[in-house]
Image (cartoon, rainbow, N blue to C red; front, top):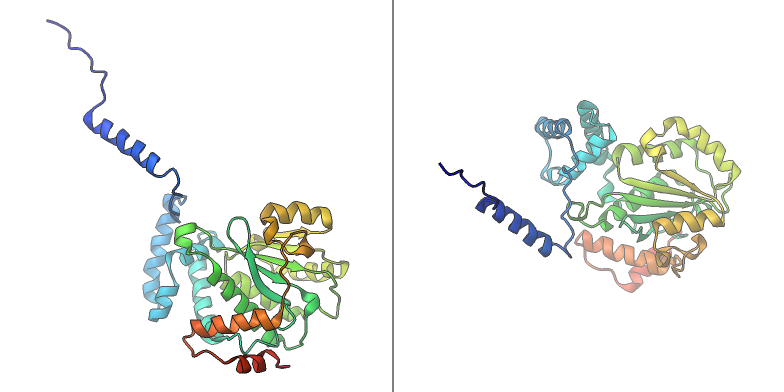
Amino acid sequence: MAKKKKSTSKSTTENKVETNINENNNNNTDTPKPFDPFENLDDKQLDIFKQFKEKLNELELSDKEKLWVDDMMILRYLRAREYDLQASFNLLKKTLEWRKQYKPDEITAEHLSYEASTGKQYCNGKTKDGKPAIYMRPVRENTKNYERQIQLLVYTLERAIQHIDRSTETGVEQLAIVIDFNGYSLFNAPPMSVARQTLEILSDHYPERLGTAFVVDPPMIFNILYNAIMPFVNPNTAKKIVFVKGEKAKLKTMHEHFDIEHIERPHTGTSEFEYDHMTFWRNEIILDREKRQLPPLSNEELDVILKRKD
């Protein structure tokens, strides 16, 4: 009886799979792979995520809150507490209560015009990987109204988040903060309570939003404040703080994270941007009113707001 020849050809199914893979590879040459937030999660993490979503049923969320608490947000809260289900869930509940009380989405650009007038804090540009950048210059502090200072912080964080491309498409969901301490002194230093409140807001109510904080040219006096607040800083947040002191460090670090044309000149870039309140904040007010679906203001009305001293 003749031996049955062993087939060396691939099955029809195998050929189809290979053809489809090749076609997909060819078709996707210029198309980036869509971001999948669950791609790198293990089975345990996926199970905890599902349990978290189920626990949301325990909360009486408004329609607005249901839209706000999306999958990406849940994953940020889980990462912030290293996938401890109850700790992550408690953190989200704390944020939901804070947002009800503090109402960050009701803080307006008009209300903050004088607070922002020196350009001590604003959004400008992005890092190479798409993180919106917030610039802070403590030397430009112009008030002792600590409540409004915190409001400006929250407003700026909310605006920076609005600049982020849809995270479900790109995977970008973090911010970069550049804190320029040139000219900093005790006169500019906030009270310890304000520093702690700032850290609490960042870590508890915007968890995993900070990508990197670049601390530029910190003076000796800053070390005292830094060492005093470090016990209150979340270890994960502490890892994201990068000290940049001197021209060499600026050239190396800033150019590593930003395209040169997006770096402001004081930080060794070529960007000609300089904060001009009458122009920059005018645009903020216009955009903020559009977002709130409010009627536009006249130039005269805008000028009055921008020239306020309170």
